[in-house]
Image (cartoon, rainbow, N blue to C red; front, side, top):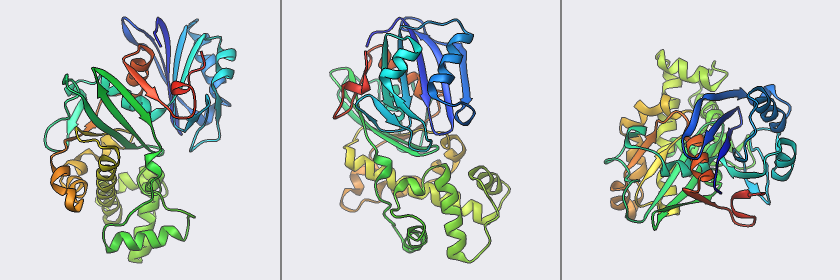
Length: 336
């Protein structure tokens, strides 16, 4: 999809970020807004209001949404909004619209990220600018747990939409087996997302409290984080365990996706977790893969610290620098 005047949207379970861009000049940062999803009746209404306020008439739009895209439609995993690409095109009067998974947009950001946009966690930085072919994984905790596989082939970036965050949780020690027992009593199925995302942090905190027989006063993920910073033992243990489990999940996805050239972490929780991720436990778990331990030890990992990687990836998709592959529908949910 080529682009002239472009609307970029990054829709999660909590926030909707909108910005205008141009294929030649890039993102117009002065037009960037972040809206609370709960304060708007629909994606169409929020976007139409945004465009009307700026008298903007883009010819291309890329919507990166936190849900599975199928046949040009998406249901937001952690919010009741349902999105129809063709309806968006008609209501917003934008000729070309592409609907992609939000972590597919995160994956597409690899086409534009610089080394300064990354914070190293493992043995060096992934080399996204190298001319050779490469394979990568991008995952991260926000409102949910997103994941995607990315290939660099013949100097083009190919992104595969996945729901890797919903792979089943696999305990790695006796404590995690106890956590699984507690959580299995609450949920029909315990996926990795039940522990590794914003709500997952709260689930983990409460499950740890039950296992250890102590009270759990924090009521939100933000409260768990702030309590940990104040030195609360239970909250601090929850964040440490969160980093360990994220390391296990990241290593599993490296194996599942064949991400031999690098694993990158993104999402709203990563900046707060970065010191714990760099402390060592994340990488120990990442590489604790038995007969493949030596292979995983050599795979670099890093955190994406760019302020808006989802929007950066959406622009890469709009300008044709990255292609999103989605099985069972038109490429990337396009509804031109």
